[in-house]
Image (cartoon, rainbow, N blue to C red):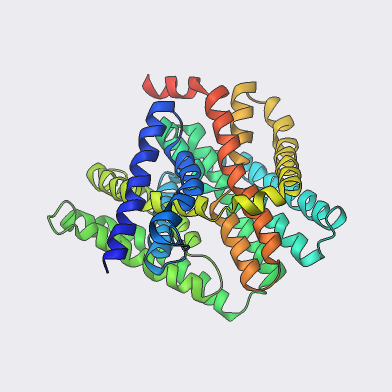
Length: 385
């Protein structure tokens, strides 16, 4: 049992070190956590044996998964219905373009250049097309852009992109059946009922020492996550939808939101991001550097071509570039997609080892460039005024 406690303390030490580096260099803590996860895995092998950080350990997998669910819920809760109605047309356009242009480009490239079979090529296309809501929301939250009209529009576009990715994966590899219908029905019922009962529950039980409101929320997120996995989907999708439906119900409970954020960012998300980095095998990466590099360049170019020419005609260059770069990030569903392909023998272990470093790179490099050169400060100035 002591091994578990020492391993947990090492994970938290990595999280603390990541936070200190993030403050020192003024970059997103999530990105530093991914990088620290890459090198922390090698350090951990000297301390804990060949398993290192042991990212496949049950309790680590659960905490990381819960971190993704909570981040996704919080991102969805920023999308109030008014903002959604105002921006859904442009956001849908951006979300669909940034999924389908990279999907076709990367799929064709994998098949034509690297001779992957079409099933593996299509899975690679999906894995390199989805936008990471976890990365995007964390970056927007750290800058304060999540409360701006611009930030809410980005989150809507990200939701459209991720939903399309889930549907595309299901259509190509897991045909929808009666379980999908059950999941859809349960999520719709919860989406209709929760906005009505949640305000009443919070009115009587919010801000109590027993933290009933957090238990209430976790019950629904866990239950819907379980139904989603049972149906062959992913637990993060219901979390996004429930977050959107409860946006108007919880926005006035600032202490509740603050406590959620404390637990999520303080404990859960470091496990999620460090775990993502720990899957990168530097030895395999050096062997497959060329395909990793080419896939990364193609993914970034296809994302850029898909929306930047459209955005630059309507917005400032700085804002158009920032939007394009954040829509180019990947992590959450991208890694899930690769794990799905590996477990169902759609892709080989070598193909998996190529795709994962590409995905990690898309989480790090576009965000660093965006935050270094293209932050749309005018939206933050509007927020202050």
